[in-house]
Length: 374
Image 1: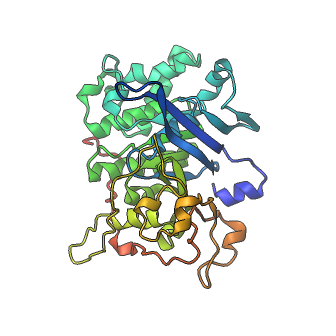
Image 2: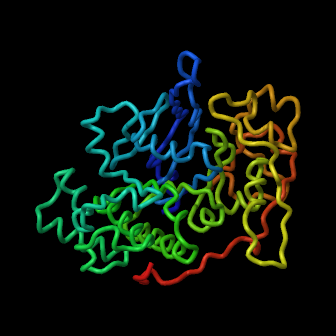
Image 3: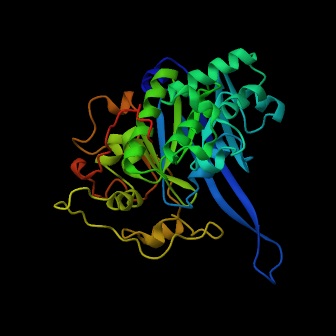
């Protein structure tokens, strides 16, 4: 479904996160009293329209996984609001009771990064897929069995696989099982937490193609978390870039790759591996290490590593605001009808950042989804 059409029809976003914060208390070092606070997610806002895929990218430790888990209320938020639309009703799940939340959970599911640790090794595939339906009290035994077989077929596996255990499968097959388990209740929202990062490139393509096919078949909405920009570009309608607990840029996929407006996005794009040895792109090496979320920098959190930083960057935090289109950049009616491009940089309207030529992006192969050897 086209997100722009959803808004024109007056429908609320499927998921809307507003000023979300998630802090973790940790013990201080030996001989120090009290606790310190890790600001894993610090004032994050975004919306996901029904039928779209929002990619969430950033380096390890930036808080993207915490955003996904907190948006599902697997972690209780420290503050902020999480609105989720169930049918025609919009529910603020950040404050509902656990009893009410259980009824909502069937509409939102998650696919974890490592299927070997997320699948119970003592349960067969059939039992793993049947368990969510038992927990939510849905369907008779015969109906559950029919749904299990239907989902096994939907993810490209065979009926006889339901009697096997997770250790009998390859990594790609285990991830297919994890996807089937997430979809067995027919949710509307799926958080995919780096679902292909542990797989070979050819198997990544199979799983990504599978996710796209399932999205069309079941009308799914994805929050797709990854650190590989090539993967995110392949599957996402929009991309949000995170750095040290904050979203620093969010835009439609093609817009982001054509015109990045935040220096951190520019640095991420320069790190994309080049598949052609005859093509070279200047790598932007960021100085130092990422600051600690225990003690984030003042002002813009990226300024200690930013080559464009000015004095104002260390004293004043930039707001995530709409990018002003430059002459000849915006297509006809894009700003009125399409999703916005926002960035958090004091100088985003004046900087000219390097982009990634499309021919330099890694091309993921497109093998058929029916390959059982994955």
